[in-house]
Length: 327
Image (cartoon, rainbow, N blue to C red; front, side, top):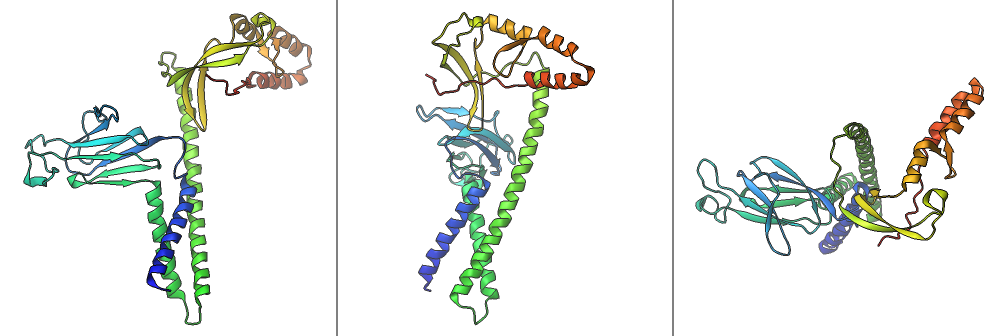
């Protein structure tokens, strides 16, 4: 095998492994463009981080008011967003050291830019001279894939006997790569399970805190849309049919979770009916007096089942026809 062919094969295998690692840890790119980024200030100077408005080129400060040397800053951003890193003079000397000529021109402060891409787990290391190293899940997967391939290649060559042909060596490398990918998969599954447990525990604590704070201000809606929904013909809403327009506040809208607040979803009569009765699984109303009388009429042995039935009815979800009829 000639050197160019071997190099090309190494290149393709590396990208193949990287693609597999990307699928293990997360999708390398997705439809949702919101991206969380982290910045490490390793420049040795105070810096400002400014978002650059793509239309006006105005700068919007993202640090409060600056980022100390050695500090870390997390930011919720979006793909294609461009940021400016601006060095600030030293508070003692009023001089800079990360300008175009470095310490040789201390009166010139450094300026650099970086752009958020489509990948996940993006980290920006701001080094001396304001040189920026940009890592993400894709670049890390390529690095890990290259390391994995080099280890397997070296191990296969060292373990090869004189009697082993090229086909056998390729098989040994394939087995080595497969075993390493299995190991990476197990690590990813463990990490995913751990993060899921942490999110679940945090959600329970936050829900208890938020629901117990009657004075907490509500989150502002990201946007408000109109939902054209069917009008149910029932006694509680006057027997009207057809459709009606309802205002909906979109509080949270991600592929895996959505929080939409529908204004005036039920009429006052429907509210009173729900306050006075229990929702039935079939969609009708069963009054609390009916439930109480049926409970008292039953024997004590049947009471627990009635209580469980009441809890099951109270916990029953309300089906909403999200038929995509937004406008």
